Image 1 (cartoon, rainbow, N blue to C red):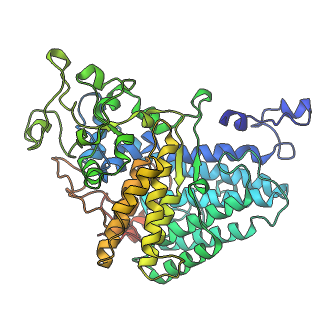
Image 2 (image 1 turned 30 degrees about the vertical axis):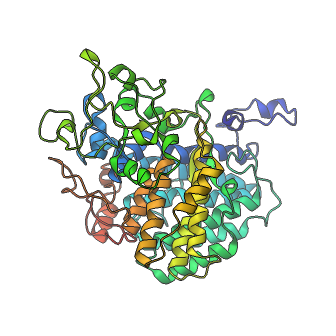
Image 3 (image 1 turned 120 degrees about the vertical axis):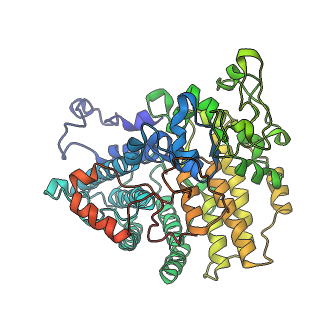
Length: 527
């Protein structure tokens, strides 16, 4: 249980004064910095899920989910149609604020750890910090890094580093952290990710290095190849048992934020799988489809009830096209050429009732949050092999491993799984198409999009789409959109930065060539 690790005592030494001391008031000599690690992990998980931004922006930008965005859930207009809602400015700053807050907490943990000579905990903190701030820079572009987190030393207006410099610094910091793991004698305790296993933290670090290196393949191929090969030599995830995830703990206040969102009545009704996703899964008889999608029972009442179980027959699933509403005009969903019709009668009609919604596994507040999976690592290795990088195994072998891994990992949600026989039959029927490099590249990256999307890691689906150009998506061009009818490629900077750090913000905007939703960041080739 997470709460058992968040509380500020261990109960093992019988020291009454120590276990009854408020950890927020304990001095550095008394407090065990390992007790901060679960908070650091949860803060990252909270940043990448729910209303922080991923559901409200990237989930529908990249056409994993869809919504008609009317009624109580009009906030999904940000995502499905790239249109401002009443709280868009608040959503914009969510990742920025939580990312730096989480990194500041990591710094606090590390400072205390260094005072006590806890070398391994410091290194784990560096890995978490790189993962956190790489998530921030991938969303916004240039960010404070070299001068960040120094408010205690009086540096309250840090300069922004160009994303290329941020990436080189992060990769160097990550490598140093991995190399220092195991050099200390301290145990990492209260670890909700790997239970203090140093070898697993190394694998995690190298797997994160691989993912970050693959971001750069179009803009710095030499560095990308160098770091990919370094990560592989160091040792990346070997199986789904290695992957980095955190289980949530609803009973004690640490629930999955995406599940919190998808339990709101309006969200239960409004959030559907995109036609792009359902069509993709149906085209190859993907065995994940009945695990992740259901058509709700007929009627508005049932459609708003997340406790009722729908029909998960793969043949009956219908994805909702992005970009439609329920306003009665030319973009009303009922005008869509393949509109399947409503369900229910009288005052209980559900106009979108026949479209597939996420199953109950996504409404489970104890569901895990996936940081980095074996499936994604293997699929990235498939692309690396395809590019001619020195990695063991062929592109086809890594692709098969990745797809099999994805089938295994979807079962970690609980409440549904793909059998090993179904998974094996699927990969046998759908091998990597090696007839051309482009065909193979498309299959690999479509699988990354589908796998990360189905695991509710929507920002990762979006980032890899930006990097690779797959899947090929048709943008929505809804009246009044904020991106000129293009799929957004970044979030604009929070307006608060214009007040608290205006000069450095303006320098960053100048360096990036603008502060718009379609301004490309350094590693984004703008496919």
